[in-house]
Length: 255
Image (cartoon, rainbow, N blue to C red; front, side, top):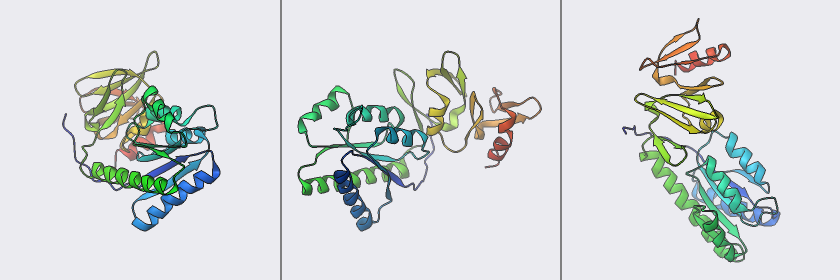
C-alpha cells in the first residue's frame, strides 16, 4: 500500500480524570511545571472527575493526539480501566497512564486487555512527579517522531482486524444496510460495523460529509452533477449529495 510522508506540528493534548480534587490538582501542577520548563507542545485539554466528560470530549474532538492520566479507582459507575477500554474504541494510538493507590489493581489491565504506557503509584510524591514527567517526555517524543516520518494512514477497526488505509485510495464511505458502513476504494469495497460520525473523527480535512449517508474524499472527485445531485469519482463510481451540503462541497473542492 503506497502512502505519502506528511509533515505536521500538532499540539498534543492531555486529559486527566481523577475524582480526588487534591490529587487532580497535584497532577496538573506537575504537568504544567514540565510544560513551562521544557516548552514542549503539550496542553491540558481537559481535567475532570467525570468519565462521561472524558468520553464526550474525545468523541467530539477533531484532535487526534492524546495522553491520558486516569485514576483507577474512580468513584463513578465505571473504574479508570473500564474507562480506558471505552477510550480505545475511539483512540487507538493515545497514551494511557494509570494513577492509583493500589498496586494490586494492575492485574485489571490484563483482565480488560488495556494497553497502558505506565501504572504510577500515588503515595510517593517524588516518584509520582518523576514518572509523570518521564511519561510526558516519552509520549511527546514518540508523537513527534510519528508526526514527522509516519506514513499517512487512517486506522479503522473493521471487526476482526484493525487496518491502516491510505486516504488517497479511499473514494467514499457509505452507510449501508443493517448499520454497516461500506468503504469504497479504487479496487475494492469493504463492509464493517461502525457509524459515519465515528469515522468522520478519524478523517483528514479533505473528507467531506456530503449527505447523511456519505462521506466523500474531495481529492478523488472527478465531477459533480449539481442538477441531479450526483458525485462522480475518478474511477467513475458515484455517490450522492444533499442540496444543503452542496455549497460546502464546492468550497472543499477548491482546497
